[in-house]
Length: 245
Image (cartoon, rainbow, N blue to C red; front, side):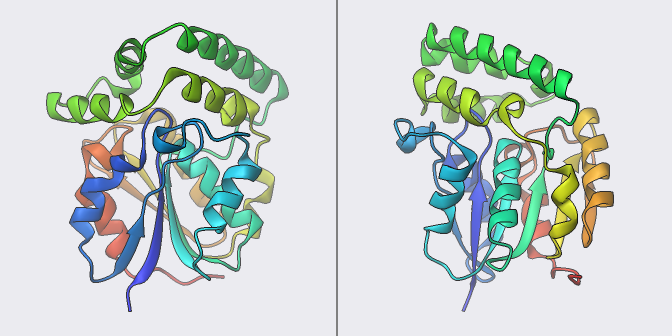
């Protein structure tokens, strides 16, 4: 029987962002599910958008235990799920993510910036929003084909849902989890792109803070690894999990 795998997408994406990873995995190892998270895609109107509410959504998917993989925003949610129900998460894969902003002043500044961005998003069409998000330096190295797939996925959203998501579970709204990472004794894979400098440093810190973690750096890749290097993510997921603590 194949293992259940839950895949959590990033901000402005939907569960469709994992399609190529699921295809690369094939059906032998995992039965994969990639839900649209609150504020996104088919769940754009779901409220409230909080870490607790989304954690409950994931745990209500029904499996007694599962492997859990999250990218960026999805990785931050995955940490909340694993800390809430560590007995149900057999394996954790964190892709280009963080455990939050520790400094209170920096976090308040980020929250104010996120609120201002949410206000702008509410005044944009989804086409304008998708284009503006894709033009960030974070995604500058993407090929035309990757940019097109990312843009098509973003257009499955609506500005009101994305704005509400940013306000509810943005990095500025998140209580940092760095001091709780020692509680996560299941096997953890941390995956980052070689060219994603900020998240490479965060990935190294996550590896060092988690009791049973290993780090994979994907050569020549940037931030959006599920779209840029789906085979690399599938390869990590296909490797045997290393020993837990």
